[in-house]
Amino acid sequence: MDEENTPPFFTLDPMESKRLQPVMSAIDCGDWQVLIETDDDLRILLLKQGVEEPMNRSSIKWDDANLFFLSCLKQDRNSKPLTLEAGISKEKFGRFPYGDSSAISYLLEWIRPSTRDDAAFLNLQLHLEKLNSILRPTSMANGIGGLRMNGWLDAEETTQLRTDLTSTCWMPAGGEPLDGGCHYAAKHLVAMLRSAEKRVCGVLLRIHK
Image (cartoon, rainbow, N blue to C red; front, side, top):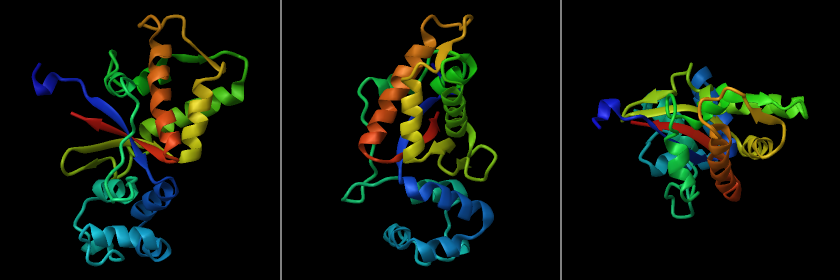
């Protein structure tokens, strides 16, 4: 299969939960210096990555997408990027066998409330939508090097999404095109979210071609 026709592959990357919203807001609203003044760990991180003047956004040569990603990506004690380990679920979640190959898109289209807990179902939808699209309207959605990002959840939202996906607040639509597709998608997404919970981190939905 040639690259142009190969379906995209989706990953969930572990992110520093407390940094996601502040970094996104600082890039979006232009308050970068204020952010660095209040986040010494981020300033040190950028210095280690070769940024000579972390407080001066105009001196940082990275585009907004790469700045967001590298500022928020969770690292280990040796300053190496972490990965979420979820066995076979990483591959199964990464390329869902329907539509745009996104398990999250499939869930958003084909889950329905079970009438048992309307509030939980609403939260489930909101968190799936946020993970799938909060970055799309911003300058952080696409960056140099093929970086493509849809959205993110902080650690608390990650746990809540996992909780709602494993609850009885939802059910598959009667006409879903894949037999058992919603449960298949939810199963592998839950495995990824559990891995993030173990690392006490947020998650970022990234697209690879």
